[in-house]
Image (cartoon, rainbow, N blue to C red; front, side, top):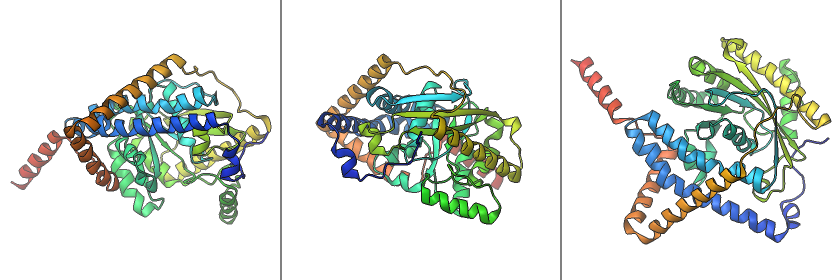
Length: 381
């Protein structure tokens, strides 16, 4: 059973044989996803993540989760109902709506999209946040969404990233705010060349030689765990495997790959994870040795052990959700094109989102600012 790395065929050869209707279907899906994303951002996202945040961060996150959870659900609908990708869960059956830190292997550029299938089933789709490379924040439309959803951008240089991570993590400590914080400790997606470099470094440093994952970078995980430990319920160790090729973004859109996505979950209580940075690093290395073993077995057996039953997505709910999003998008677009005031509103929102995303700016509640000002005045007198 091959698992497998991205197909080596060229872009043209890979998609040339697709039926015209399949290509049209993929383009229509992509157009719907992009257009609805833009409308969700400039109307609902700006109101929930900026206007509401001026009064309450907690209510802002709840409103943002409600709107964007509905939009993000379009992706699992595309994967599972339109492209007929089979999603197979195994390992632990975990409860809904826990506050968790999630670590996963990074096989390909779209691993994080398939975690949405998992989060949707647990009622936390709108609350999932990622640690991701800062260059993705500069993508048009999607970069704005990453900013509004409070993803943590990193340069993958700890000297530059530490202050940003600690600042953003300090805002996630409220145990009343649902949270799924996901990170990929490998720091980049898996390729044969990167694996060889990782193995060479491991041999030089006396570290385990891993064949199916890269050596994990420990600083980010240690920081996340230390900053949030008191407000988390557990750590989820997720291992992802694909049949028969690892997909790219366009593979997802056109339904080329994968035929199956296997997601293995291990729920780890906080009291079984050490507290010192050195011990946490050793613990994380051990978890990636287990991932390497799981993926080796997956290659030979075609599945992970202990397959569990997660409910299938309701086709009726998916269709109703999709129709609702499309109707809202159509209504907002109609007013945007027919009203000068709506055009002005859209222009102002876009003008705000560009610098806010680039400089990672988020408004603070007015009441909090007033309290800070009064405390400063009292301390000065």
